Length: 108
Image (cartoon, rainbow, N blue to C red):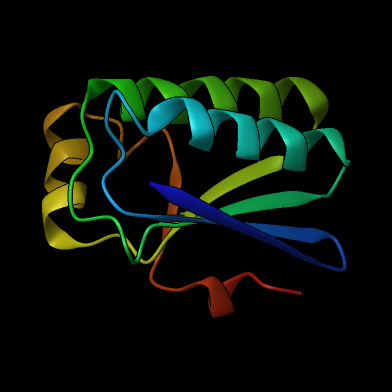
């Protein structure tokens, strides 16, 4: 899995390209941590290219949310496909995260 990162103003956008599973989660975790360490007001994880996420992916995002709350920043999930959203709903994590339809809703 590849992860792209960019920053515009107070928003860092992380784009995982591919499944977020046991093999890809460490790269996603490292990318989110690096972005959070730069101190943006918000980090948006763009999930448009993620068709599947396992429990290690969920754990990565929960850890990132805890880090965001501890630092006073915000972690937002964007462009979540139906299958990934279903995983979040089953795990009841949809109430824990701010989930938006697209990066454009929060970029800037």
